[in-house]
Amino acid sequence: MRARAVLLCLLLGPALLRSQTATGRLAQDADDAWQAACELGLPVVVKPRDDDYGHGVSLRLTTEAAVREAYATAKTFKPDILVERHASGVHHRLFVLHDRVI
Image (tube, rainbow, N blue to C red):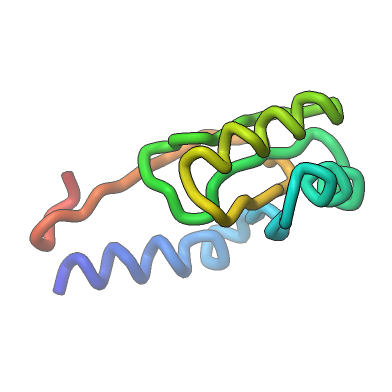
C-alpha cells in the first residue's frame, strides 16, 4: 500500500509542485537523434527509454558529434532511445522494495 502511495507521489509530484518535466521524443537512429535535438533546442539529454541506474545517459549535449556519440552509447543498453531537452535542477532517485523506500 505504501509503495502505491510513493508511486502516486512520483507520478503526480511534478504537477503538484508545478515543476517542469522534460520534453522529448524517441529517435530512430543517430540522424533522427540530431534532428530531435535541433527541434527541441540544445542542450539535450540522450538516454535509453527504460533502463535503470542511469546507464547510457548523456547530459548537456550541445553538438551534433556529441549527440551522435551519445545515441550510439545509449543503444548499447536498450533499443529505444529518447532525446529530451535538458532541464537543469536537482536529480532524485527513489527505490521502493517491499513497500519500503530504500
